[in-house]
Length: 225
Image (cartoon, rainbow, N blue to C red):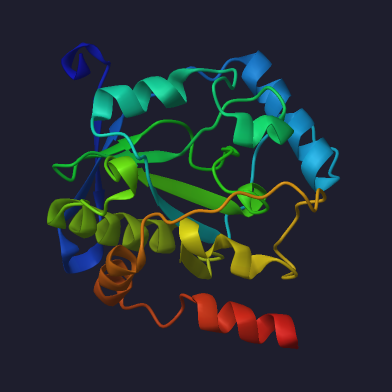
């Protein structure tokens, strides 16, 4: 199935790190889906917007909890949410993500980097999301190739978007509650997350090694100011 997708290879260079290859594998994102996203922004963030463009300030890493690229892609390719009672507060618009990393480390861009994707409660309007294929049944089985790909992708995004200051795992998102970047208006709209876990985040943070990036400790300190 993957071979039937329209794939466009884009070489992107990162200083001495070698070429960053991103495969453009777009999901369906029609005018209707964009309009539903705008309604989500108004309902959950209290913002009235005419389009879904964002200025990214953080990166959120995830796992899909699905074992294959094809099945993961099919979830994000749907425009309307279904089968997720824990997310009914989101309205009709389906979950989305800017990047999907396969188990071999190949990086797929599913939608424009600066379009809002619904992947992390409270932070979507500020965040670029990266999903990693794996984590089925809550088991940390993400590969070394995915770690290396995430390191390279984060470095690419930092170079492209100088305003990005934070890197978190999905399981760390609630540390942002009460922070200036937190926008969620519904106090009851929360989910508990374990992905992608401390092992993965520690490895990626160590590999990126950017003094510019802030994590949980800095977020907590900023909230106390």
